[in-house]
Each structure stands twice: as structure tokens, then as C-alpha cells.
Length: 69
Ligand SMILES: [Zn+2]
Image (cartoon, rainbow, N blue to C red; front, side, top):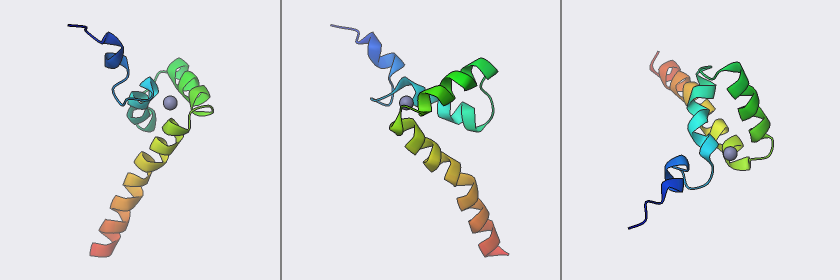
């Protein structure tokens, strides 16, 4: 049976950088990694779209909390 090891570095089926997005939004990337990631997002619409979706979560939560007050 083949190991398909390339899949391990490509968990989302499209781009290995998608696993960096959470760390980027939490400011957890090293400066060098951050620079590399930002350079990548200029050429990868998948990562840009994912950043927009994930970056929306705090504002969605904020709207929810405002609605309760
Ligand atoms: Zn990407």
C-alpha cells in the first residue's frame, strides 16, 4: 500500500499554507514565517478567502454579545 505521504503536508487538499492561517491570525508565526505566508497569500486566493472567513469569527461573536446586552 502506498503511503501517500504528500497528503500529510496538504491536509486541506489544496494548499499547505492553510494550516498557517490560524497561527497568522493569532500572531503566532515567526517573523520570517509571517513574511513567507503574506507573500504566499498574494498568489493564493484560497488562503486569502480562508483568512477572510476566519477573521470574521471575532466580529460575529461580538455581534452576538451585543445582541444579548
Ligand atoms: Zn495558499
